[in-house]
Length: 161
Image 1: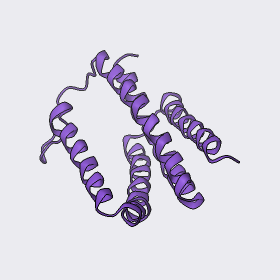
Image 2: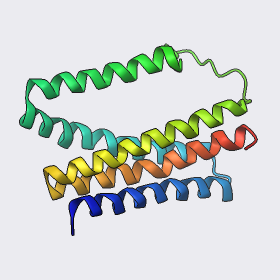
Image 3: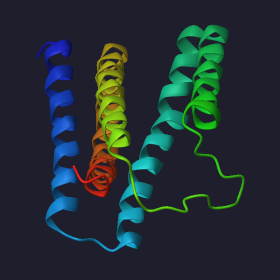
Image 4: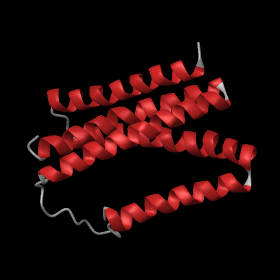
């Protein structure tokens, strides 16, 4: 099958995992500690895939240029975490109010749409490098999408949407 068609189908499958994760949180009230395990599983798999497969492969293919792009990606995330959407706590907890404003739910949804677009690019890029890497990236994104669905659904429910 054509790698682009495969990537699109797998991207849609990953998006379905997001919907599945959201449906689970809406249909069943999970204890918070179980949700943390799901999030940890998805995050761990994404991190392992990036550190063990994606970064070494990009360094091998592009060398110094790839290293600069990895650093740039980190700095962009760091910038957003500390300025645009301050979420870094420096050890103390700052979530004093449990209420989530409705405009935040729309921000989360917009962010998810942009994020999912880049997930599709990552899957397609993986398949362009090798079949094995494409499947690993897909699996990492798929496992990441279920807890992501939990998160988005939780924010939507907390905002009254």
